[in-house]
Image (cartoon, rainbow, N blue to C red; front, side, top):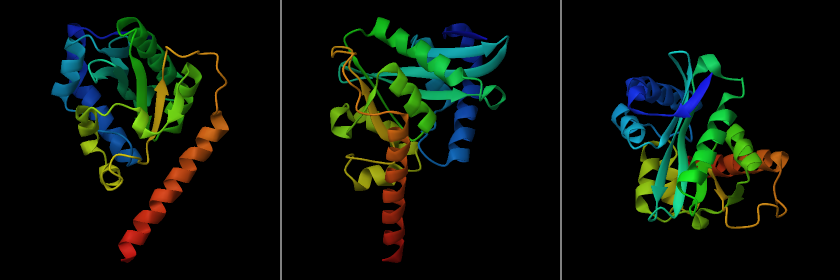
Length: 208
């Protein structure tokens, strides 16, 4: 398995990547914003993407975006092809793009929002901590990316204060050895609480 910074020679995989993201969004029904092949291609051309290949076969992908004058970096579109899941590949891709981001944007805070418990655990192991959305970028371009997510109405109703996604932030300028307030079990509990809260509100709104 090869995990590398994507270059122009990998543009041929853009449609496959886009379709894989779309299928995953449909299966999960939550927390994944769709991305067009053109969007994926732009990230590859800008040198802001990581791709995993098994020979010539697409295995996984993740891309980088910057917001707020590059004060914030986010890793998006983390996806593993179904044929290569449950092998720890997501963590390897995430680790690769994380280290690449630190090198390319050393003064930026790295963050992400996700409903996926597996991604939360990977982020936690890399040093991220759960935070409120107010600690993330206020750049409207970032939040526009949520418009294709099935939970966008929740984000709108709360005025971008919260959603089913959990915000997680890594600030390299702070002491990385500080005591972490969360562990894997805490993240699982946090996800269950948020899901229960919003599902309850959704049911209440239907009854009105």
